[in-house]
Amino acid sequence: MGRELLFAYIMRRIDHTPDLATFVLKTEPRDAFSWLPGQYCTIGIDDGKGGIVDPRPYSIVSCPEDGVIELFVELGPPPDGNLTPKLWALKEYDHVRLLPKAKGKLLFEPAFRNHVMVATVTGIAPFLAMLWRHFREQTLADHRFLILHGARYQDELTSRYRNELSDLATLLPDQFCYVPAITKPDEERNRGFLGAVGRLPSLLEGAIASRGFVAEETIVYLCGNPDMIVAAKTIAERLGCVTREEQFWKPAKEALR
Ligand SMILES: Cc1cc2nc3c(=O)[nH]c(=O)nc-3n(C[C@H](O)[C@H](O)[C@H](O)COP(=O)(O)OP(=O)(O)OC[C@H]3O[C@@H](n4cnc5c(N)ncnc54)[C@H](O)[C@@H]3O)c2cc1C
Image (tube, rainbow, N blue to C red; front, side):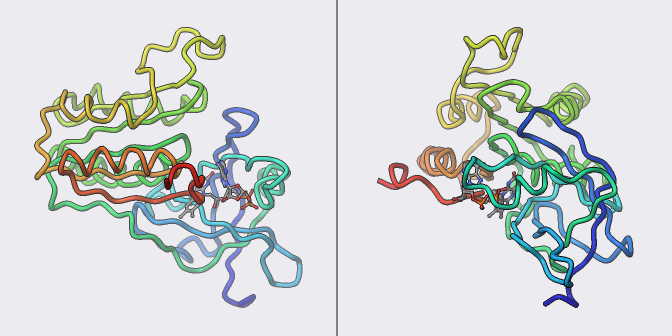
C-alpha cells in the first residue's frame, strides 16, 4: 500500500473558525490524482515509513481543472477525533499522504432539470465542485439549482463559500437560488444574519415549492450530517423527488427509529 500512496503539500490553509478550515492541497506530480466533481479523496498523516496514519475521506471542493485539491474540514468532536486534531497541527508546506484513487457516487445527474442540493456545513463541498464545473463549461443555465446550506452559526457557512454562492445567485437569478440557513438566530454570533432560520428538513418543502419545481423533474442531493439526511430524505421522497446522499458519519440511533 505504501508505494501507491501520493504526497500532497498544503499550499494554502484558511481558518474560518477555530474548528473549520479549508486545506488546499497540491500533489506531486500535479496530475497524479484525478476525480469527478462530487467525489472524495482519502487523506492521512505520513507515518515516515511510506505509510499513512488515520486515513479519512473528504469530499473535494475543487474541480480537477483547478490543479489543486481543496478540502473543507471540520475539526472532529473531541475526544474522539483521530485525524482532524493532527491535521489542525499542520501548517502551509507541510504534507499529508493521499490514497491514489478518488471514490464516491454522489455525482451530478444531468437527466434532471432541477437540482436541489442540501448540505450541512462542510457537506457543501461536493456541490461546490459540481457547480464550478457547470459554471466553467457555461452549462449552469441548462438546469435550475436550489442550494440549501445550513449551520448553527453564520460564520460556519464561511464567507469564502457563501460569497461565491451568493454571487452565482445574483448572476443567474432565474437558474440559481441560494438559501443560507442557521438554527440559532438569537445568539450573538448570528447577529445581522439575513438568511433563513430553521433546520434544513423543515425549510426544504417550502423552498422547493417557492421555485415551482415539479417532483418528476427534480433530484435532491443530500450531504453532511446523517440526521439531516434521514429527515430531509423522508420529505423529498414524500414529495416524489429522487434523492442521492453522502453521509459524513454514522447516524445517531434516534434518527433511525
Ligand atoms: C464520503 C465521506 C466524505 C466526507 N467528507 C468530509 C468533508 O468534506 N469534510 C469533513 O469535515 N468531513 C468529511 N467527512 C468526515 C471525515 O471523513 C471524518 O470522519 C471526520 O473528519 C472526523 O475524523 P477524525 O479522524 O477526526 O475523527 P474519527 O476518529 O473518525 O472519530 C470521530 C467520531 O465522530 C463521528 N464524526 C465524524 N465527523 C463528525 C462530525 N462532523 N460531527 C459529529 N460526529 C462526527 C465519526 O463517525 C466518529 O464516530 C466525510 C466522510 C465521508 C464518509
